[in-house]
Length: 475
Length: 100
Image (tube, rainbow over all chains, first blue to last red; front, side, top):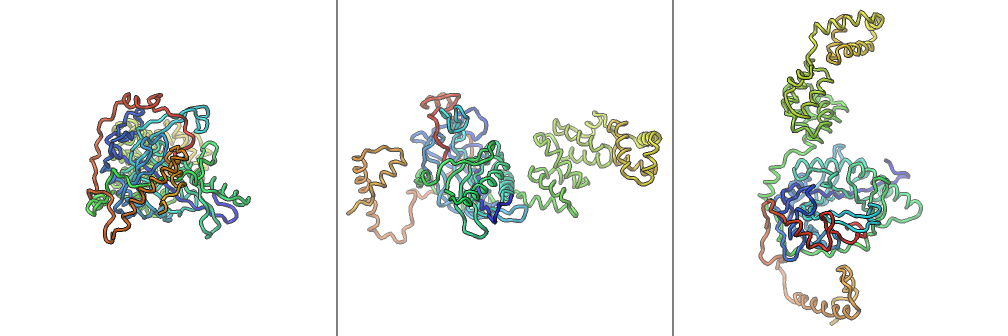
């Protein structure tokens, strides 16, 4: 979307990601999504008097891995208490990092070539989860609130971008690339729908090259789609307010996905006084060079590099192939593609089957060995399976694993022998002399007509390319 | 010596801490807290050039534990501490706004 009358949007994103540790940030309670409410709690994460936090080493390593992947500087850091009252935080303060975060600075390069700066990526603990009961289902009008503290104390890293984003497309690309990086580091599963990655957007508008305008922070963005829609809506709202002679107040706004609009939650001035002070129960966190080096050395290749490696195997790539590469990397399917290519599979075919069939059956990926994927593609390439049959075999492999040749045999996908295909084609030519004459006169469209007939009469077992070869051989 | 703390400061901090103070208490605490601050300000009379700020008396850094799960509390025990419980959760008066 483009804003009217020369307006430009300025967007910065705050991304919270839960870390995939076994235990919580400051206690040994399990960090697991979907447990029965309040079964993963203890005196520390319930904030009971006298309990003391002890920092989880793995959480620190994940935070450093994220920082390293974002080209941040890893520095000596401290923990602070951020004080406020809210029932989902039983201590009445959140342990966070304030003026000395573990990661500062850095950048993220997007696939379109643009660069978004990173201001910081710091450690903090998550809060409990509240459900608001009552008439409307929304916060306003709820009679009481129910709180589950399983999430209380789950380790988080908050990644704050610079105000460098200029469109909702770029915001989505940033969030998507960052998600890929978080998954690659192993720090996060990136599941926005489960809340393990959450995004707040700071949005303001200005005329080109003018100073930044007043920003509003939008909360409740739990999908990339919401992120894009909310930013466009908010920027347009601000332009309208200003053009009508109004002023933008700095405030927090709530995105309503169903209504497709943002609304005021509270103005910033009255709420923000967190009385940050040093957390006296935790000592400084200052990873030495050796520890940092160990984390850096164990960092796997990031999505941008993996995308390059795969795209480099394409000669003269088409738009569709590059799109498929994107999907393959986003879903982590490239081991299957690389393995198939190494054994002679066609790259267009391998990318297409990965980006379509494997993507559609992604939950069954554990059932699909690299070898089974390769074998299926090679069978399709040799004409032993038609495209439709190959897709069916892949579907079966994703559903329950197995051997592609055995599945093909069990399904009755026996290759039509060339003799029997020849006989079928000959019979159909005889039955459709007019169409055959036109094909002979060079009307290539009629090839599709004959393929259709052959497929019908063989119940889809023929290979389209073999039919074309047969037709050309008789022309 | 004038108090380093204004009455409005004490009222503001009390509001943030959800403390309801009477006018007399505000006067009393402005004076008492002011004395605490004055006492701490004695540090200013010392020459502390070259002394590094101390955040912790033991000088420890990087105190961490292994990422291992330990047993949690029994839920009935936990919920017995709640003012009220419903559906395995703490039940609290309705929340007026979203978390900061």
